[in-house]
Length: 390
Image (cartoon, rainbow, N blue to C red):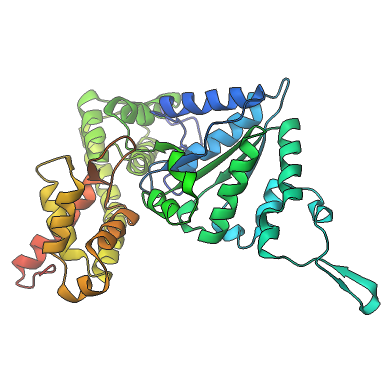
């Protein structure tokens, strides 16, 4: 039976919504409750900070939240959404264009007049970035129609502008339903502590982690079933294990299996098709791994990465102190002379080699199979007589 859809429903990539959003019920439930409260005129108690390694589905969840918000309170108090990335927000004026998509400039008092041709011009002072007139107007607008402001890749924001945005959010939330959602990599939490907004540590944290085994299976099986395709139980178990429950790899597997079913006109996939699909996936996955490994190598952190990966072969979690010991013991002296162990630790977190989910003091692998790849490459170099991480 050939798939009924002419295009593959699986979409491995950056932020494309999967054909079936599995395993995010808890996160969706929390966000739905916030939206329901906003639709009733209640303001969230804090900003939302959503973080996790790349490929976990943060952007997908933001897209879902945008759709849900626009649909959520539409009957009696429709919620407005606005979306931005740091590339689009270079100056306060860009931020206000998103927050108040109206002729808001008339609210600012002129800083100077252009005398030639009697042209009126508005300049920006540092305190104009969050002027009371603009903040008060935003409060009024949010009382009429609640606003959810979504910021993706927030860890790359300009620190000064991020501080302005956080302060604006705090002022508005005190009086009107406004939700600021900042999404980014595991380095986002550390970045926010550096911007100088003292209340940021009280933000609501939402860690976007790998799925469990059942959600992983559902994310693959349910879209295939819509086209009359099933997967043998043993074969599916192999796929779930090989995916590492990592959403990006899940989509790679789904794409490969759907393509095979279409090419071979199959309605049931067995271990034979799994083996064939694995071959197609490996090259893409190896490129993915090598890019990350090369980045750590360029930063001089590959020896420490190998040592960390070795530890994670025997445990799923470890402590911050243990990681700092490993980094100190495996970093070049000249590297430690210019950057502290803590800075190196933050680099590993920023590049998602390790991370610690919310409500946990323990660290885990960003992608366990990436650590396995790093170790395999190290063994290859050792066998060739040129250790890559000495």
